[in-house]
Length: 144
Image 1 (cartoon, rainbow, N blue to C red):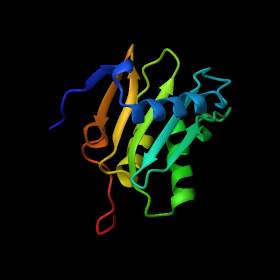
Image 2: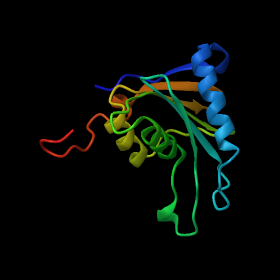
Image 3: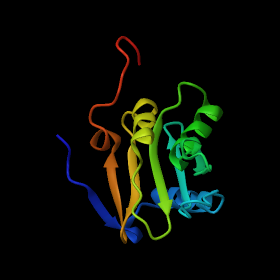
Image 4: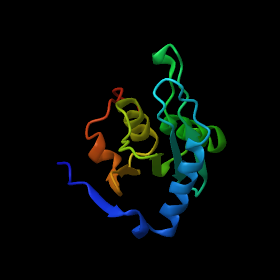
């Protein structure tokens, strides 16, 4: 059963969460978003303590667009290898509520089954588990 979203004012975030949000904000400045004009940044912290950033990269062929969240997760995989485990992800977009899309939720569920997801919701930060956001992820029988 999904739990209610927990929101908190940005100034009540832990120092670690504030650092992660600042990394996501910095990443958003690198976004290539000429079509939506929605620059999104994400930063993940792995169980090993590594912090990796990503930004969205759009394309005129919209299906080729890549989300900030997946780009951050993929950077973590490249750095830490296939056993990486995502602990927390922070998502930033100026003046927008931005929760992960379905594809990003699936990737997070596989590489961070217990991950905490932090995203802006108005003037507050919403904190949810990936299990709350995607309670029944896709799994191949007998795999992962």
